[in-house]
Length: 203
Image (cartoon, rainbow, N blue to C red):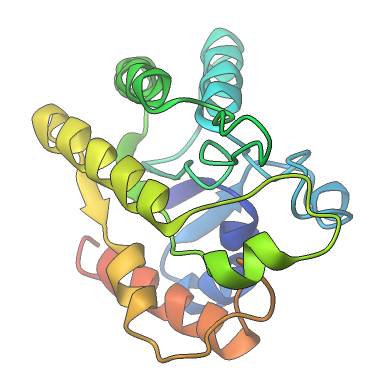
């Protein structure tokens, strides 16, 4: 079995552990450009999938160029969508646009080889996040939950399997974060183990 991962910086950070856990059982690959993405995890380039509009654009391009050679496509977007302008309150991708993008993403992937698996967006520490000096954008926990809820409904209606990384991560203790939104190494390893366990039940 082969999997292909498209996701934000959270997926980049648990990726090496996931690849290790799947070694010899499931072939792992992801959106390319990890070195570039790691230069600034808050700015989506390279392996960082970014918001739902960016993911949709990437998938359309992939579809036109021959698709994705994998059995499962593990996909997430949401943390970049909920980026909020502190002055105007405007979201990078408003909720209604996010819903529209996800529906189109489901449609595009349905015409390609891999079967879509949705990964719920992980929580953010809004108190730390929004008090960081020189932070150009805010994130709010309520938005994370609202966007997850919207994605849940769309994936359920579309018959897409969901890995609930949000709830799993939220139950990993009081201090899982190494900054405003990213996680300590031991949390990343547990996230990867959780996903690998889910995948193991499908092989």
